[in-house]
Length: 69
Image (cartoon, rainbow, N blue to C red; front, side, top):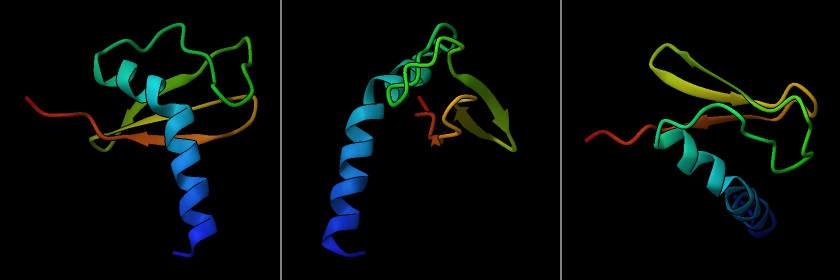
């Protein structure tokens, strides 16, 4: 991965940090996309043991690793 790609990934992780933490804590309703702030909110669903967060407006998809206790 080149340096620019790493910088973009770090920036995305920073923007999505609060959403990822909320989903890890079980808060999945009322979440707004940190990139487009769409009023429709984010969709959170589990697929094959993975949690997927999707913005229906900007089409961003983020996979969240749920921390095991």
